[in-house]
Image 1 (cartoon, one colour):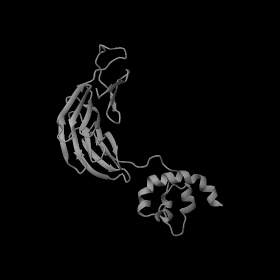
Image 2 (cartoon, one colour):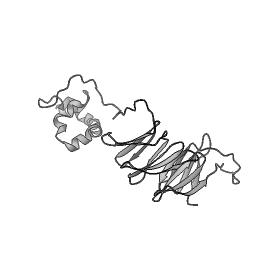
Image 3 (spheres, helix red, strand yellow):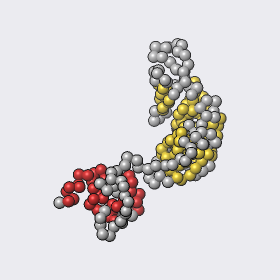
Image 4 (cartoon, one colour):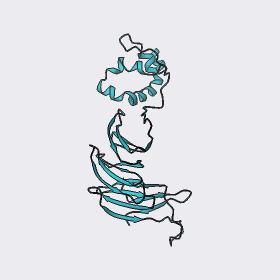
Length: 239
């Protein structure tokens, strides 16, 4: 009958329901019967089949007819987002104002705010998501998610990428240096220069170029440096 007519559209609805109302359904499973259907778009299958229950919630003025692509929206007021990183059930956004805000990945609610004291260019969580690094034009800092700053170090050149291993925070600078900072106190353990090279340039005669992007392999053994309109250079950090 009527259910067989809307069943093909329920696949789309189920995906959207999990994204928009997943936390609510976990805390109160019965909400799927009476509270959630009236909040769905009027052309969705779940709304047409369930929203008009006599025991359900009644809303007036609903204008959304279809599911939106936007799941959530965060208003930054007068500031501008300049960096983003994701972790286990958390993501962090760094601002031009220097603010760094941690958000719950399920509810999108702000959990805690930090201040880097300059525009934030790079953010990165460690593997445990208990700490994260922030880098701006002049400083790199390591934070504990509970709210405390572990250490801060000055930068000779801005970082374009940051990564973690067990003992170090690793940063790549615009000046082509890869620096290893001790994760405990921020002491510099290694600082190595990686010059741009052409494929056949065994004598390193190519002019020095500033990398625009950098990426590490998962185990931090390989580093890729990308340049504007030039080759990507791969480096073995183990050697």
